[in-house]
Length: 126
Image 1 (cartoon, rainbow, N blue to C red):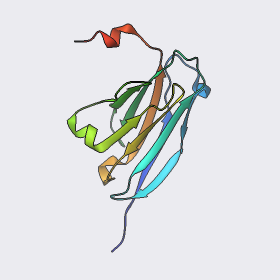
Image 2 (cartoon, rainbow, N blue to C red):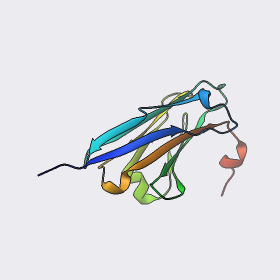
Image 3 (cartoon, rainbow, N blue to C red):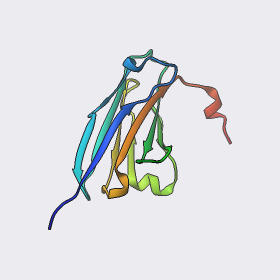
Image 4 (spheres, rainbow, N blue to C red):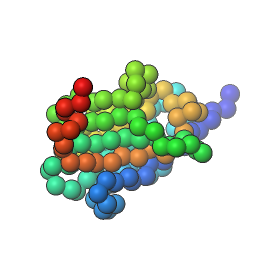
């Protein structure tokens, strides 16, 4: 039985400019259905940039939020189903990763990460 390959590509998305300060890898990842794919994101911004956001853009669709991580905190996903589909970690202020589990054709697309400085506004939401 033939295996279909899924293409996951990662592109840099940055807040407050400076694309060269946010680096994602790998740039392109080909995986078979039911496998997992991990993408890493790191930045060279100052230590205040401890928040990381992950987004997905399927072909022909708008970008959607997938996960939020902050160094020293638990990840926040876009919904209950996203928590079983994705695993987001932030092992240091400068680096994090997103894993897409049990790949299916609907997972193909571009994945973006963004970093941002800490803001008390997020911690005060109700």
